[in-house]
Length: 319
Image 1: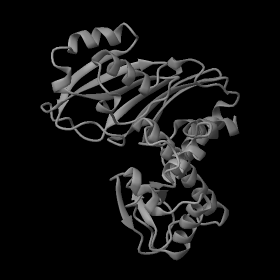
Image 2: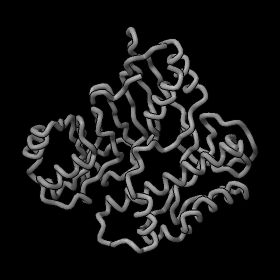
Image 3: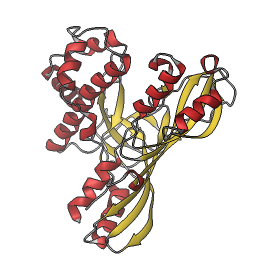
Image 4: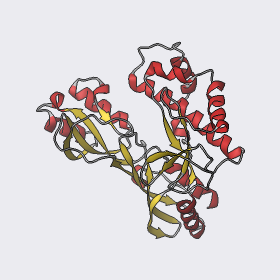
C-alpha cells in the first residue's frame, strides 16, 4: 500500500480552536503550503520582516510531504504596511495566502481543535478489507501513540541534558520546545505500552479521562469500558500536570519518568506546565470520497496532536 507518494496525496486542513475576533493586535494569515514544514514558512516570514521567529505564532505543526492549510499569527504593529509585499513574497515561494483576519492574541501551539485529512491511498490489494478496517477504527478507536516522526536523532539525550541544565541555555526556543516535546512524547508512548501490556486499556477509578466530543477532562468515579466520551489519559509531563487519583497509574507514570533520571520539578525550569493526552483516539466524520481499482481517497477528522499515519499503518496491516 502506498501513500504520501506526492504532497497532493496528503491534504491537511487545520480547524481552529475558536473563532477569530476579527479585530486585535495580531494579524492571522490562513496559508496553504506544499512540501514545506511549518517552520519553513515561519522562517520565510521572519526573514522577510527581519524579526525573531519567536514573535510568529502557530497552532500546530504540519507534515512536510503534504498540501496543508493552517493559520499563522504576526503582531500587527510589526507587519504594518508590509502585508501586500509579504503576501507576494510568500506566493513567489509557493505559499498561498487564502484569507487574512485579526485576533486579540498570538496563536500558540495547541490552539486548534484538530485537522481534517484527505488522503489518497494507492496500490490497495484488498479494498473491502481496508474499508472494513476503517469502519472498525471509527467504532473502536486506535491507540493514540506519537508516531516516529516526533522523535529526531539524539533529541531524547539532548532534552534530558536541557532539563538537567547540562545543555547550553542559548538554544533557540523552538528547538527547546521540540527537544522536550520529543522526550515527553516518548514517555507517553511507554506509558501506553505499559497499560497495554498490563491489560489496563480500560477506564480505571481515579483515571483522568478525556471526552473527545467536548474536549474536557474529568476524573473517573468508577471502572468502565472506553468510549469516545470517556478515554483514559496519559502524562505529557510538566510542572503543573494533573495526576490520576489511582496508585497503580501514578506509580507507572513516575517510574517511567524516573527511568530517565528526571522528576516533575525539572520541567519548571523551562516553564513546561504539562497536560494530559488521551491514550486512544477516534477518527470522526469518516468519508470514503472515491473508490477506484486499487485506489482509495478517504477523509476524516482527528483531534489535535493525533497522527493520520497511524490510521494508515493500521490499514496497511490488513491490505
